[in-house]
Every structure is written in structure tokens, then in C-alpha cells.
Image 1 (tube, rainbow, N blue to C red):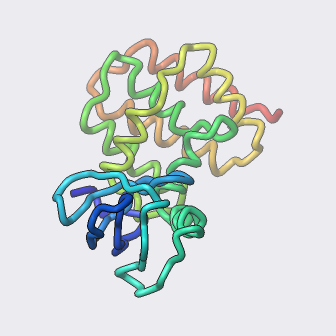
Image 2 (image 1 turned 45 degrees about the vertical axis):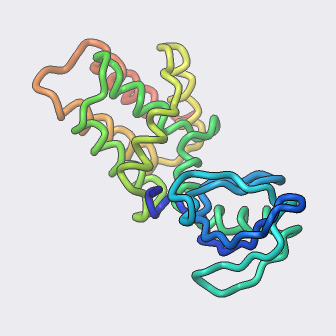
Length: 205
């Protein structure tokens, strides 16, 4: 079963491929594209994908709303934009590389410990103001975040500084200090990163 926070919608569908017998399925949808929906199929008890073309009827089991299959991708996209997954993705955007910076700090000593993951999950909620974000979601986002080199880290810090948002800069410094504070000893890489952020954020761009 998927994390409930990752479920975009719970749908009941009547599904029929070609001349096969139609079947009724309850699907906890976690992914979609213009041609398919994917998620936990409660009939089969496993992750499955379904072609939208082969969906004969569909309704949202939570709201009872009937959805025409031609509008299903648009409908799911609208729900996705209201989800914690969507707000979390903002922290991974090139113009707002918060998660990339935090990942750089956490990985500076070669590994990411459980305590650091907990701090990053909490920071994700602070930056997005979305308390629905789960630690599992934050961990998944962290694992999908590329490891920055030193130059890329400095570029990312510069992008945050150019936003001119002092609150964001304060939060980022605080999160960095908290990540570093989960360990007994500060590594040279961590200290260098913190010093660079502090000096860079002290200057307006």
C-alpha cells in the first residue's frame, strides 16, 4: 500500500481491454500521464497501470464525483497541484534549490544519518508551510536530489541570495546549523559550506 500522502485520488473504474470482460477496480492513484493512471489496485493488491483509453467509467470514491475519461489527466493534475507532493517539488526547482543545498550539507561527510533526515523533513515543512509532508515523502525527495559539487553548491546558494528573501536565508542557515548539530564533530566540508552561506547571505545581490 502506498503512503496515504502520496495518493492523488481514490478512483473506482470499470476497465475493459478490447473484447475482454470488463472488471471493476478500486485504484489509489499515485502517478499519471496523458495516457495512463497508475497506483495500488485493491483488486490485485499490487501496483498496476491502466490505459485511460480502456476505462469505461470512473468516479472518485471519496467525493462521488463522476469523471469523464477524456478529462481524467486534467482532473488528476488539478488534485496533484493541491497535494503535499506538489509543494515539496518546489524545493527541488532550479530557481529555489533548497533541498539541493540541504542535501549537500547532509552528505558532506559521505553519508546521511537518520537524525539528518529528520531535520530535513522538518525543514521541508517550514519552507513550504505544508504540514502534510511526511518524513517518507521528504526522504524520497532527498534520495532523488542530485549531489551537488562545490561549484554547483555555491551557484545554488547564489540563486537563493538573489531572491532577496531574508526569511528564507535565515531558515536555510538555521536548518544547516541543525543538520550539522546532529553530530559530535563538524567536518571541514560542513564548516566551509556554513561559512560560505553566512558570508554570501550577508551581501545583497
